[in-house]
Length: 331
Image (cartoon, rainbow, N blue to C red; front, side, top):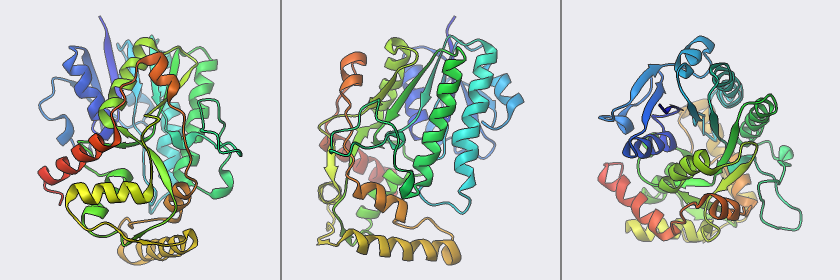
């Protein structure tokens, strides 16, 4: 009998995945930490195991008896008081989980990476699954952690673990309770905290499509392959994205365009204030400005072609995201 383990099940993507697995009648075990917010999984008929991804014994217990593993757990932050946590969770935690899965003899593992782990082509061609990370010079802590986490995952594949890597674009939709940086962008625009924009852009994907993408990768994905999860029609400039959010939410959009260097100076100032005074996540960080300023385009054709990944349009994603945050009382 199939029994799947989902790490990171209380998070944004993990909870959406668990809800879809349960809807399909699949037996699900999830890992939760003692400090996890469980709002996203309340009432779901799942088996809970208290386990941290850095706890070898706990992860062995979690994997025992499971046939398939979705390793979704990870830290997604552009500002932290302790950036070492990115490496501990996204890299060493991946090693712990995959080691336990290998020991348990699971049939297949889906590892959740990110388009953050992709590099760029010098000629502006969209990055596909084979585009190696080449952005070390930008000093992007989250992106570096996902790059190194992938390297760990591929090590286990070469050792014989049947593993598929999926890389979601910037995820938006319902259930981003923490919220992640993508959710914070939406909320900051709705709350009037984004006074300006600069020449930047990014690919956006629906959280429901990402959840289905994980399941499709488990069903149809070839071990040793990776799949970028997104929609080729959902790249948005920062101006268009913030204006779409603002118009959907009925608030004033940011109207002033500033140079990237000005946005970086603003982000450095906000980060210094967060580091030494407020200890609260700032609206922008130098890393978030740099990654948006790249306007990196990603090719999602493979997942659509080989997995049948759904292609929810950007306007629908923004409408549902804004509606959810308003209904949930965030704004």
